[in-house]
Image (cartoon, rainbow, N blue to C red; front, side, top):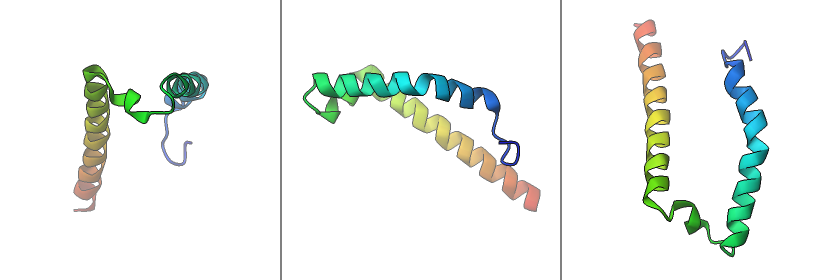
Length: 72
């Protein structure tokens, strides 16, 4: 992880919370007769997904800009 500059704390959180998220997804899909629309059925989930995508996009853009500035 040091080779790719990946912080340890988020990886540990993912390892701990990953199985819980998987169980919750399986439970939600079972309760909705395997309808994936249940994952975006409320406005708050749509907002949270949009914030997640915006954060990922911002991070990718910032890294690209920093790498481009370092190459110049």
